[in-house]
Length: 297
Picture 1 (cartoon, rainbow, N blue to C red):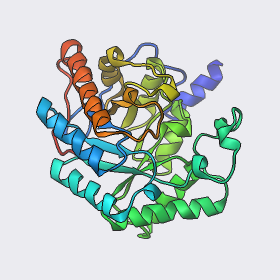
Picture 2: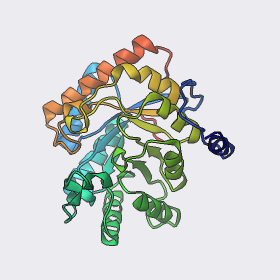
Picture 3: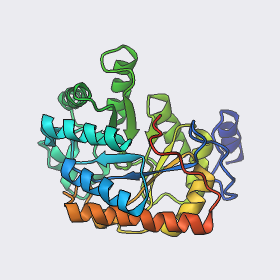
């Protein structure tokens, strides 16, 4: 094991999980250590309700993520969400629609098939996924939730060659199932702009991932029932300290499933969860720096 660990360290990868939980010295370009993201906002009506409710609390977030897929939205709905994002100065992330759960295969719905995550089966699905990105980018969206490493690699190639807008950004979903520093380094190298590791990632594992990559890490502070339902609010201060720059994905416990069709009332409850997490940060890590409103890069 010593030789293997030594080799890992020689190529810039931690030789093991970081039980020392060292402080991260990395930051967003604006100097911030953390930002807030609310996932599972599936359309403009709930997006507006969420943002208005946050205004009432005097709080702001940096990202809103739709998880059901671009293919489930009309052009008008996408335009409205893009407009709301500009008005409230948040980053809108739309999920690429074709994925395992909406394929013609039943394998993903079986206990063993679920191991494939939300990855794509067959090259036709890759083509359809790209079409989803092209459609949404033409309507003004620039950030996309990606579930498949091959699709990420292709989109990065297309971005570099001008086939899609060069300012498109790609966030890798937790449903891709990554949870170690080597996987994170691979994703960064093929075009990921932020990475969401598995939801139950432990602090020492998270710290090791941060040492291997420079791009932001997205971490669930809580989860829907279908993903375990666990709430990690009291771990958030440590998450920020060891893994900045970090996006805190908050509000998921309001939903029953990843693609839960949130109501207006659900959106308001997700806003409340931001309040609860912010309180924990302010009490236990008051010196932590949040990015200013409107920070996107």
